[in-house]
Length: 313
Image 1 (spheres, rainbow, N blue to C red):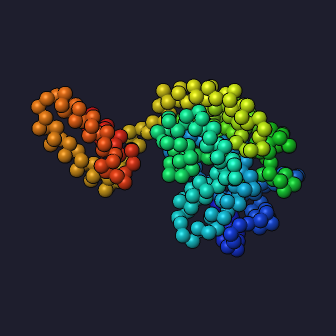
Image 2 (image 1 turned 180 degrees about the horizontal axis):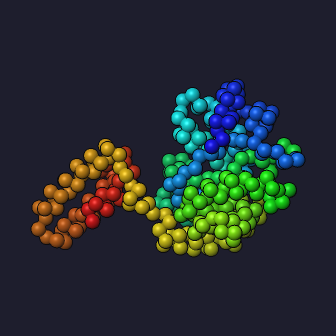
Image 3 (image 1 turned 180 degrees about the vertical axis):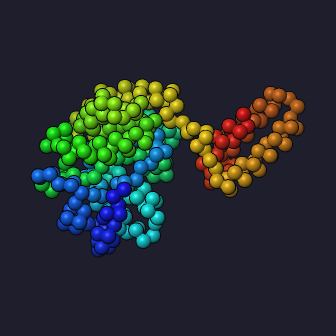
């Protein structure tokens, strides 16, 4: 992690409602430079190893960089490191006036939310953020003459610096999340992933190639999306059949309070089942009991119901 290398400079930033490029695109935060290409560090280091879905961009833009810095600068005294960088990424990921909305609409359109058992993919950026990992081919923000790098000029594969970042940062990151479904936003990102798969550098099972970038400036977004929409749906169905959206039972580990509640509920169920003489009546009771168990033990989430279901069977 590079956070420690930049922490002092970050803490020295004045507390402001918003930052300008002259505040952040400085020598203190310069990660690497090659001619006109400048890469600046930003707090995008959190890796959610429990994620079921990875949404991958080309590189964070200025908007995302400012949002992440802003969050960390205002919370560095209050939050633990891991929680802070997690929240910073959550706050900044695909941030912008229309980009996140466009992305959510497209994800809901291919019914990703149904496979994740949530109401809408909007929840991935809020209360169900634990299901999502967002990242970029080039993890840290890249600027050409002070402007966001789009992936086209210079060509990504022509830059040794970019290839070095991919090998050192992206490849290990994706290999920590081999079972997650990858959604690459834009052609350049898809091309990079194809290259990594062909080279045997990553082993991810499901990649939704040709998923369009959600930017409102992408004039071909809707056409590309509609052309590939049914293919994306089929890929998600295949991923579901392989169990890529399921939570392994051995990873469902309740804490002490949750386990106490589980034991209490299991004892109640056991006593009530003993009183049932009719096998069909007992089966019906069991199904009804498990169906409502998550509600009974709130505020615990659906994972606890899965644990109980596993134990009872």
